Length: 91
Image (cartoon, rainbow, N blue to C red):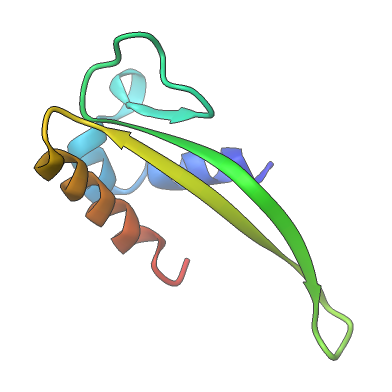
């Protein structure tokens, strides 16, 4: 599923793991935060998935994700958001 691919990609990016941890300490969660997560933490959810067709008949998907970030401050959330945006730009 595309959600699993997104997790694998984000959890392998040093710009993201610098804030959200690696391995068992990784704080990237699909769909829901656990109770009392270590902060900062990020949750992602697939909001919609549409399909478009090119003029040549090629079908491709267009996913839309929502990312929720919680942290001790607005600055920590902004840093995580920037890291995620930078690694997903043109992905």
